[in-house]
Length: 255
Image (cartoon, rainbow, N blue to C red; front, top):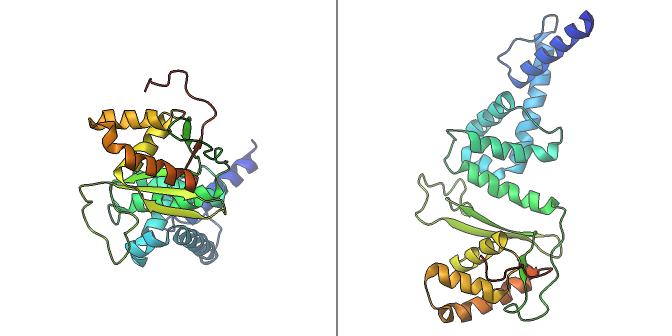
């Protein structure tokens, strides 16, 4: 690297640093007023991008706190991607790393808002639909359906409802992409959430196997769950949330 190349790189680094942090002086020889134009463009572009990606977060934080949060992200975070479409994912991870937030639920709420776009863009195909009794065939959860468990009721949060403490019971949600490409959210009951989480951890067992496992976990007679469990499998199959697995695991009874 010759002297001129090194000087140019130093100037570029100083220039981009002051774009991220307006409190830093611009490189020597550059007009501060003109640099200020670029600073405003960069900050307003990022703030608008994040506000479009996380509208409920922005509304709950309020304009002033959201602008400061966006500015802190620009100043402190070093992006790992050049793609605008992936900045939102990095923003979620950055929020999760912070010790303090404008509201303690903001990181979970941002993840909830991001999931819709992530699932819409996910390159995956659902498993074959159920073709026989789900109690007797190996099952798997569709990659286009995800279980989200949050400490906060993120689906209810907004500027009009922002409690300071989470409820005692976590919130379990199902997010899925339907056959038309639409992304849908729904609240999961305890049995459905436990089944789908178990299916994620141990795919390929039969419906009967999953029922046995859940009954064992809760120390109840499987007959007490049978009717509700059959209806649940039928509903999840009709929605495309679960489908037929390629083959049963080598040890069907081994969980």
